[in-house]
Image (cartoon, rainbow, N blue to C red; front, side, top):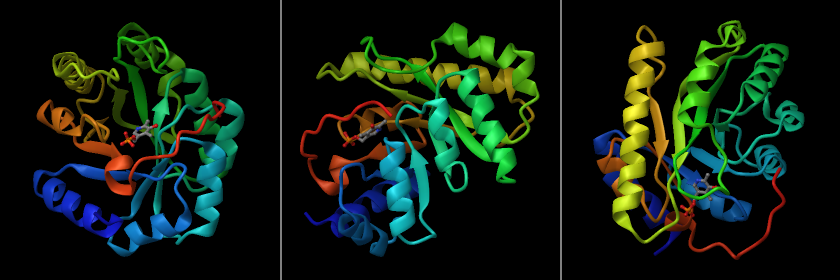
Length: 229
Ligand SMILES: *Cc1c(COP(=O)(O)O)cnc(C)c1O
């Protein structure tokens, strides 16, 4: 299967059910991204700030760039001018920094809060209590240049479908609860980013409306060890 046919097949599957496809292009060369682009794909995601910035500079300017990997406060300034959606916000501190640089760039930056749902301790994200603490914090309500669009989560890396399903279910319930409690009047809280190549069908069954697919589109990645950015 070519990248072009993978993109076409996925859009045929996802567009009618209102699920947005983010093509995760980390480690992939520009020519692969351009092939997906020429098939009509516009939303691409990276997990490293440096790689995201380099690709933004080299590739067509109507690409919507998503950051899906951990974001440190000192890296926010590099992506603030152009980033379309940050999926991986996991603290009020990072959110404040994004707000500061969004203001400098005279924009409002869309963000998702990453929630920890996996039963592994290697993954980033807020737990339920931290999430609610953040919404209740007075400092949060003063941030006018960020817009919280929803939640993101990464399920456990396991063959056990029941566990993955439960984790997605739990995140959907949390999403609905947060929406009803803190975003009742804001239609823009509308995005639930969950599902990767191995589990996106399960994620959609549980209510995901944004999936982040890398290997399903571009093929397997060569295993590479990245330092966390
Ligand atoms: C790499 C990555 C993906 C895509 O992974 P695939 O298994 O290749 O689909 C999705 N989300 C995040 C946060 C990632 O880092």
